[in-house]
Length: 252
Image 1 (cartoon, rainbow, N blue to C red):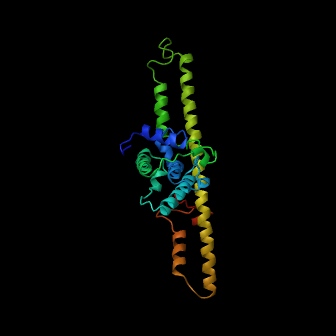
Image 2 (image 1 turned 180 degrees about the horizontal axis):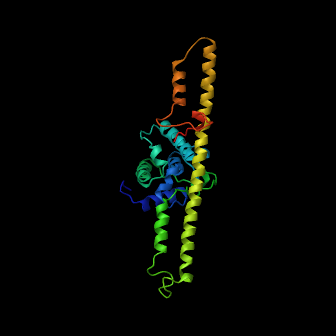
Image 3 (image 1 turned 60 degrees about the horizontal axis):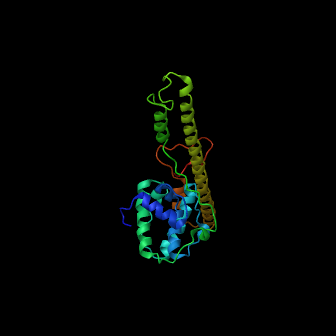
């Protein structure tokens, strides 16, 4: 399979190899499938650390950390564009999946691979990718069009009974979008809290070390630079009332 392989062919290969049911290349952005393709080659990835049904970006990043460790251990000279891949954009993941397929073709020994056994039966629900709201809106617009319609033209456009089902369908689509966006927002909030806790731990550690040095009349330029970064704000940023810069400023 060449670099010009279609998305359909790539997904068919991936689903067969890993015994999963991905329907879009974008779902590879979670990183789980990429990790298991490498496991099919080497057979020694820590699959217990790979979350195949990851739903949130911080979980995606954890999968890519596993992958980066493998690349380093196996001396694979290929940059992993993590920041792009985790956004679950089709083009970025298509290009990387094409590279993964080429790498697999060149390195897989044909030894057979039991994907389900390697992940110990862990669920592999396809990762969700948030669809643009315009998709639902355009779909709703077509459902609400005045031409044709489900009644086959037997009821006038002004008839309420025939048209009532169409707005209900549009509402259901929008409700589905809202639910998916709410789940995505929850993930972003968890990701924010995840990184905030790390920054908070660093802040406490640096502060304690600075106080210890000051007690001994010493200084550490590196620690001061770290503090400077922790407490810096972007131009135009205003700290909300009652909040400290590090507590309230988001980092993404």
